[in-house]
Image (cartoon, rainbow, N blue to C red; front, top):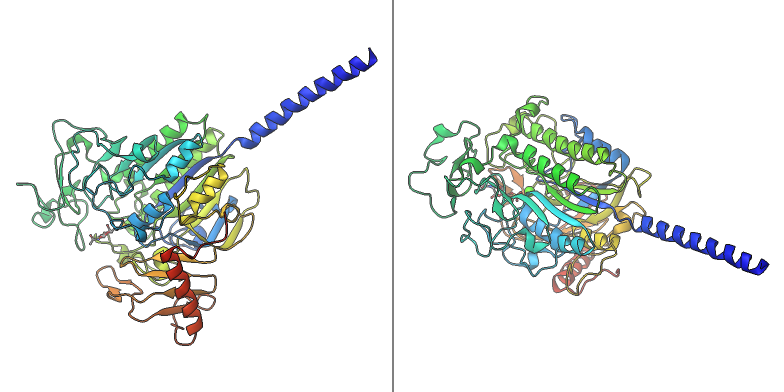
Length: 517
Ligand code: NG6
Ligand code: CA
């Protein structure tokens, strides 16, 4: 009797213990939502938490004040398409032809059979979404899309359950949002035609009809079809009600993102939230105008910060902030005049879009690829910090796969390594080297101490953009512990040049690997 009682008690303790353990386990396994906030052309010096003084970014400040702010974080390329390609596939874009700045009618650059970051999240049980700027092509074949029907290949084939995107950039046609592979708000009375070769008869262009440019005029290029009083790259016809108004782009993207978060609040979600800000044409909503001395470029930064704030507010209201991992970054460095007469150069004042870095968007220099990067996850990151660890966006794929306990199919994300602990501030382990790609495909290798830029052809200065490219026929070596790429040390340190060249050729040949899972 006694022994039965003890046995019985023991059993019930055991049962309670198991339930608790299960609950704990479930709790432990409650994976975070992952929200990527990916700005366009936002520079290392464009946010208050990175030293900007002439524009306020309170919402991004909050993320930095509660999370990890990185000072040595890199995009893989100094322009959008290769940078985004690499990030979403975990493979350097320069390995794959056809990954340079895409036209608005490019075919889908990441092919459906490719295992993407979105596939990884989907397989891990997440609901996935892409919002905003896409710039990685749509449909099967360049120039052959029928924009009046569902596209045969779109983001649904890349692991995204939901998408509300711009095909390319705001300065490229078609100027419509595409929702789940179809033009959003489609207007049957105004069928859409797109060409990057020739204009459609009778359609005005920025070049021939500058009087129709009531919102923004180009400073160079961007003189083809006119939509919303702004001329663009490429020709389009039709669109009617579906055409976007530039001043509402941030509102549209943000509203759709909020709707998605609300609809998926009870299950884990992955959202790729890629803003149009602060890319050209910069034409933010009226309510952001005139609050900073830098004109439209400053207003676009403020609008970006507002979008961040709206997402944070939504997460706060739904009680999701604690267990949402937010990664905020940019696809490449900044450029002040990127082809529209928006007075960004004249009104810049003391503001330094790249902070102390040399070069800009397009460059082999640091200004092209070193970007702001902030990681925020209250549940895991209890102490805010600034991390000087050397990190690259190429590693998000493998790092997030580790986070979600995902096993990646053989051959997928070949250039991505798991640096989750560095990203979460658990340590400050550097990547041994980071590879950066310039517009002309010149590659650089950055280690903690040095940066090597391989010789390449091309102008030292892009005159229209006023961008120092860093291209040179001579090998360049910079001591990153001393200054910001001012003194080429290649002749003084041939052994370092040799060492970095070997890393680069090893990465090219795929023989140089990082000894990490
Ligand atoms: C350039 C455009 C520039 C911008 C860039 C792509 C001209 C003269 N310049 O060719 O305005 O659109 O492409 O930027 O057309 S990115 O951030 O999407 O890579
Ligand atoms: Ca960009």
